[in-house]
Length: 300
Ligand code: BEZ
Ligand code: FE
Image 1 (cartoon, rainbow, N blue to C red):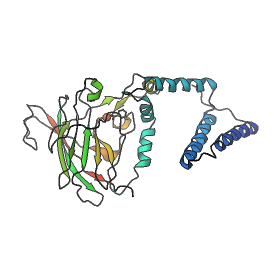
Image 2: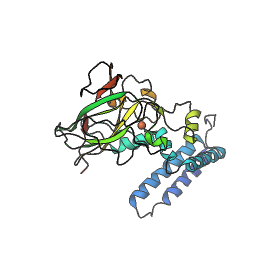
Image 3: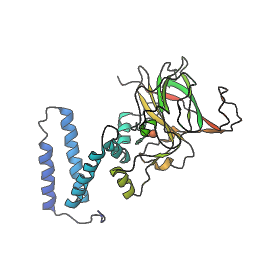
Image 4: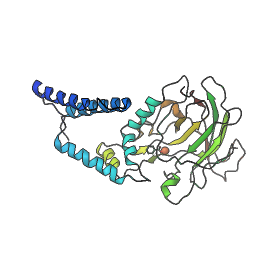
């Protein structure tokens, strides 16, 4: 796979290859489901264009089959290597982009990731999502509004993050619940909670996707972030993260999830500084940030 293709292809050869594309495309002409037909015919055209573009060798085709087989073998209930592959190829983010069209000043969406858990604990406004998760306390506050600026009361905010060792609770395999919770925005759309100051962590890189990254000289690390999923009646569900300004990984996030609009200032605070809720942090430093969330209207 090391030499770029320079070979010219004769007109007769090109015609043979083009004929095959049309034959395969036509094999889907009578698919009863119109959307299936559209997707598969486009997939065939793009796949054949790729094979012809790089003049794929049979050995490379074989290697690709072996790679995808390895991706399948390592995938189980707890690990989804196909999603990880989609993530590192930017396909997940492109799907997010296509499905979350820009809508006035609505907050941008980003990749969901594999570590969301349904039914995370409910916390009150100002509660703590950390559980026993290790890390520096971080005060997060903001408002939820619609694109006209009206407060969205009772929006459900799901928040989840890795601990300072770079692991989500579910990665410990011992049923602990830490670094995740849900809460509801107040009547004025405001919300606040204690989390952990986000730190960088690697995506799972001990499988075929890790080998792919290594072959490209790419890092498996994700820029430091905190996940949000925000739902409210009449609004488009927002799946997003907030990122930490100044993090050196912002321009090489392994899954292309960073958007400029999602990079926030995280203020640093000395242990001696009073917290917004007068909490006793046991002599620890802490950070704080503000994330004002704007929800797009639900599609009609
Ligand atoms: C995450 O942010 O949790 C994540 C996203 C994509 C792949 C792996 C992890
Ligand atoms: Fe994450």
